[in-house]
Image: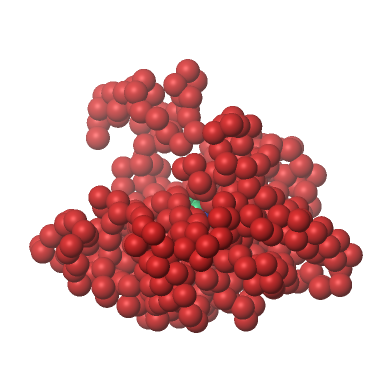
Length: 438
Ligand code: PMP
């Protein structure tokens, strides 16, 4: 792209194109990405200069094998030769069935039915609908969900309603959003002992709130162990045991939202694998297609599937146009093949060690409140809000693409990031924080 075409593209973007959470009055000036390969994005800056940067974000946590992955490119190309898309009402196809077969083989025990949705938020909508339909069919008019504060489940209305009421958009949409039941955010730390006073206090409050609202609660919904967009907060697996126990006791279902944490991002295949109890409903997305196309899945037990189906509606009441899109399913199957072939757990353990080493020096910076690492997730939390444009620019100058939010400069790198690139990445993040937040 020559300089004039680049300038025109930027001008039209600023004048007409929404970006995530963007303003039409004060539009940001996004970098233009021309192409991406391996773990590198090729950017053009405002001056038109090209620059390659190591990707710290995996395109919002989904491009786990990086970009232009030969096996994934081939899967899309091959499927294009058959059909890009076809409706799923009254029809089925091999990519959808094969993907469902693979997902169920990888899923926690007991999950036997798959709904292939078109994005993470939609999968959460479907999971919540399934829980409500299940309870209704069993003769229980339960219309509320229980969750912990500090979570994030997506931007459509139902996911928004169980996202953190303070950090989310509850104030903005008050009166429109249904009001669900929130218990406090669990205390932080993956290794926190069960008898830690903060955890004991959390459990006591949670038991009390749950018991008080039990007759209304259709399901508990949680991001197991790592709350992502709600603040990159890591909490102990004991929290899952407590909430699973309470759900069973009070006749509520358990929904695990592993859209961000699934496929080994925190170490084990599912973050919820750290406990022996399993969810009734599981949402997966993001890394499901290796970051190629939008696709998510809702997995549920036979008990839930058959319960839903016994209700007056006679089935699970959802059916989007692009349900089970064949291109997305085909690339997801190829992605699962790659994950299996690559010893992903070892890859993530290597990244975890590299992130710990590489980010450790951030603890010496005055501006830094906390540094934490879990699996292939590294977080530098500041004492103040990140100056996002400045930190982003400083990181790019150091050869790294990062997109901080709130007080967090974090990375979820592609699993294929080499040790050398990881060193560039962590040095870039720590250096950018030091450059900007003195
Ligand atoms: N749940 C979780 C835990 C997420 O992290 C996200 C996306 N960041 C979503 C749901 C929503 O997914 P999508 O953006 O694909 O709608």
